[in-house]
Image (cartoon, rainbow, N blue to C red):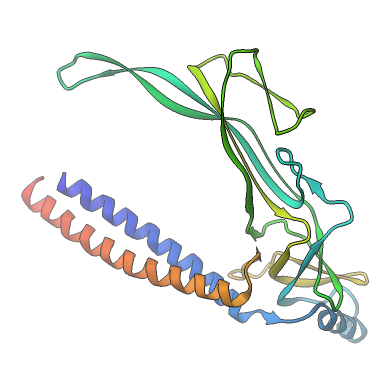
Length: 268
């Protein structure tokens, strides 16, 4: 038992180390990117095109502006205008499970479980307006921050084999799964990036024709971030996570190693 507890601490410590490394890479990317305005970036693009030809701009930048789009998405559950959404519907049910106790006696227990019956993620290219100009953003492959606009559980009532998906009529339907357990209800969740929100975009600026687009970097180690936070708040958040992960990792690895050794020596 002691040995298994030690292994558990070691695993937690390794997970914390992965978290620390991920945040360290993000912080390094944030600090190494060139802070710029859209106006300055467009000027750089024109200069590069005049010197060596169009299509050669590759600038790792951070730009803050307002998300705009002529034809935005409308989220499936809350019908919010957005440039990104992620939704899911989870069926919550009870299932009869047969177990054996330590004496070999047969036990029947009801366990609460969940299964995904609907889910979707969509994103579209959008424009970023910082007041000095407008550039395009291709969010594919980004680490994107969202806000939750729906998170609720609805009890199921036996009034048919379909439930309504969404908060208004006219939404698609989901068939009640007949193969397992009594349905207790459905858990609805939706996360979006709303249209019109201020965003900090960290990525590689490239020129496509007369337009500049920020997209996922091709260079290893450089992160592609889209967040609501400004640079100062984001930096402080990353530093706090780094400190917490560092101390947590040290404690877990130390305790894990000690418990594992004790378990091996004592045979427990």
